[in-house]
Each structure stands twice: as structure tokens, then as C-alpha cells.
Length: 77
Image (tube, rainbow, N blue to C red; front, side):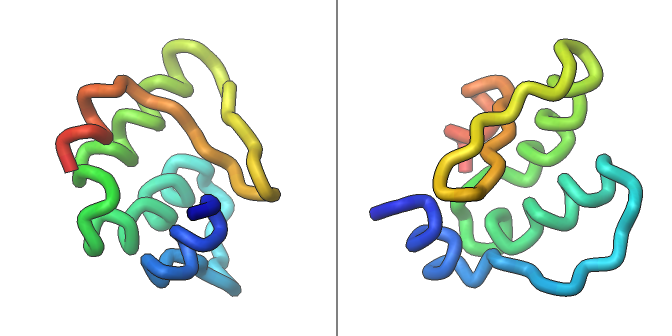
């Protein structure tokens, strides 16, 4: 399964979101994935914390940003 297929299956693609604060965008993007059990509720904040500590290093695959955080956070979903 590709990342796009997973996001479509999870109904996690959001269009028309009007937000300028990057931290709020991370939290908004995480909501549908949390609701479906793909990631833990702590994942969004862990991504924010990781970005503040280490800078913005995100993997892009298939046109989708995949921000990292501590493995223990997302694996607990």
C-alpha cells in the first residue's frame, strides 16, 4: 500500500484548511489519523517537539510530507 492509498483509506486528506500556524497545521493533519488509530494521540505534539529541537526535517514521498518523531510515539497507536 502506498502512502497516498493509506491516507485515502484513512479519509485523512483535508482540503481547504485555512490555518497559518505550522504547529496547528501539524495537529489538524494528525486528527483523522488519530481517529482511525493509525497514529497515537501524542504524535502531533511529538512532531512539533522534534521540529523545535532539531529543525524541520521531513521526508517527502509521493508529494506527501512525513514528519518524524520519536519511534515510541507513533508505534503506540
